[in-house]
Amino acid sequence: MPWRVVGVSIAILLCLYGLACVYLYLNQRHLIYMPASSRPVRQAPDFVLPRDGVVLRGWVVNPGKTRALLYFGGNGERIEDLREEFSRWFPDRTIYLLPYRGYGASSGEPSESALIDDALALYDEVAGHHTGVAVIGRSLGSGVAMQLAARRPLERLVLVTPFDSLQRVAQGAYPYAPVSWLLKDRYESWRFAGQVRCPVLVLRAADDQVIDPARTAVLVASFVAPPEELVIVGAGHNTIQEDPAYQRALDAFLKL
Image (tube, rainbow, N blue to C red; front, top):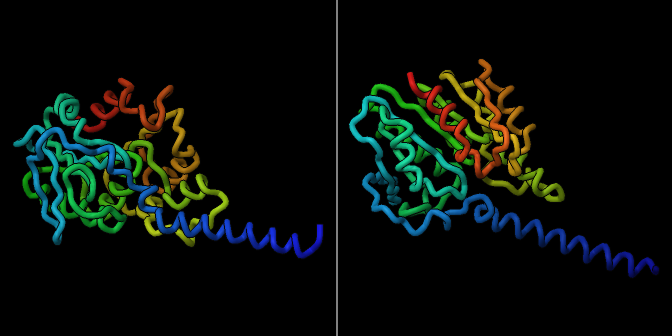
């Protein structure tokens, strides 16, 4: 093959590679955040949190209890559907289910900085009405919960299918891409683990197809005090909540 042809072929491949990287950069938040599954909203929200021109709309379950529970869900999770089972699972807690920006009936566009600021605002709104606040963060929500736990005093923290860094998760999914250069929202939970002072429970799915076990292991090793851990056998990333062991673990850890 003539060198000119080789050079043209290499140039075409480089152009295609560059276009692929540009696509990932421009569409990264559409790949990270998936609010479509949270719509339409079937139950009218009964809790509103205004945030600098954005309005977050969610639900309060079991109002009037002494202690509170905040839940931060996965990137494609419909947290509205948790109202009935959380009401049964945690009858002694008031539960706040607040969809992220752009999810459910909440306005705005999601980003890491926005979601963290919203989580802090939710905590500050809730904490004054309760003697203690516990938090559950699942998948993407574990990244939100970690940063909240590092900046506010929590009673307890549960991390479900968590990861150490979204950048490292994304690099595993796109090994050909320079993810460290492209990614805006990194959710580097391992950086905040040393600042968490409350008891922590980590729930892992044995058959997790999304989060590599190594990503969770690095996060666990980052805590000053080793958290409690439970691997739910037979559970997947998107089915862990269906296993009875999931409810039992939450009940045992959050019931003081």
